[in-house]
Each structure stands twice: as structure tokens, then as C-alpha cells.
Amino acid sequence: MRKASRLFEIIQILRVARQPVTAQQIADTLEVTPRSVYRDIAALQAMRVPVEGERGVGYIMRPGFNLPPLMFSIEETEAIVLALALVSRTGDTELRQAAKRVSDKIASSVPEPLSRILSTTALHAWGIIANAPDGVDLSMIRRAVRNEEKLDITYQDEAGSLTERRIGPIAVIYYSETANIVAWCELRQAIRNFRADRVKSCIETQDFFKQQGEALRQLWMANWQYSQTPKTNP
Image 1: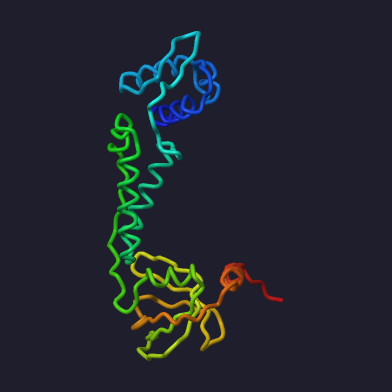
Image 2: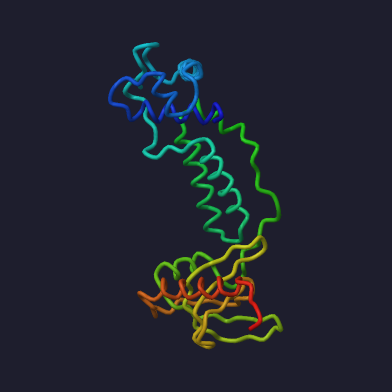
């Protein structure tokens, strides 16, 4: 376990402890030696984290050092930061803004002595930033998925032909250049994928398909898994 991760874990252990915790107990939990724990405790104290105690007696966290209710390890935090960076490259404007807010919350919630550890991260998302589709707001699609509301769309196929569709969106798939809307299509009476950049208009209908979304997603996933299964000749 890296030192940064151990520091996070030690704070977590001391934060929830009801009585002093010995270095041996911490070492057993983290699968390291007590000597490593002593060094880590000294490092935390040097960063002014209010850890009190001594060898042979145990350590406690002095009241008043507040951490967020849910504290992630350094690896978990890095995973979140990288995932947010990838979200920021999608064509979903609202999700981009949400990703920025989450990043700011993480930065402000991590205690200042430990925030320096995160600031040295070398993780970056690379590649083009997808353009937001012109004919549809992806936040409307995500809202329709949550609310199980049908939408009326004008869709242009690969050949350039336009059709009017009423769809029941059940999922959104994000790719590097565009997003696909997975939906029940009333015109085709089947589940279809619609490229967001080919949707020319999209209107909410106030027509709902309540209690059907999950069943449709299961049908979609079952068909997708079947299509991935190698076929053999009879």
C-alpha cells in the first residue's frame, strides 16, 4: 500500500475509533509493520493532523478534525477524478458542468494537508472534446430516462432520410465523438439506437411509460449479450 493511501486509512481508523488504537492494531489492519505506522503517524502530526498518543499506549484523533461523511482512499479519489475528466469530454453540457462541481467539492472536502497529495496527480484524460448535439439537449434525454417519459423526435438516418418517431428512452451510451440514445421506438415496435447528432428535434410529450423502463433495459441487455455470444452451425 502506498504511503498516501496509508495516511488516508489511518485517519479513517482513528476517526471512528472509540478508544486509543495501538500501532500494532493499525499495522494488522493495513498489513504493514508497526514501524511504518509510527512513521506515518509522525508524518500526519507534521502536517498538523491532530493525532495524539504515544507508543505502547495508542493513538486517538482529537475532536474538531472534521472529515466528510464518506472519505475515499487515494486510489479511489484518483479514479473519481479521472472519471470526471472523461465526463468533461462528452457532448453533454449539463454533465460537464456537474463534473466540474463534483471536482470542486472533492477539492474542498479533502483536508488541506492531504490535498497536496492529490494535487500531484499525473492522471489526465486525453482526446477530442465531443460537440454537443444541435437538435437535442442530452439532459432532456437523461431526465426522460429517469421519469420514463416518451419523446417525439425528428431523426435523420445514415442516408439522410427524415422520420418522425415517438420513443421511450431507456439508456444513454456515451462514445468519444457522440452519444447513442437507446429507446423503445413505437414506429418500429422494437428497441433501437439513435445517434444524438442525427436527432434534428426533440420534444417532451407528457406521455409516460411508467414501470416499463427496467423491463425494457433487461430486454435490451439480454439481446445485446445474445448478439455477443459466438454462434455455431447446427
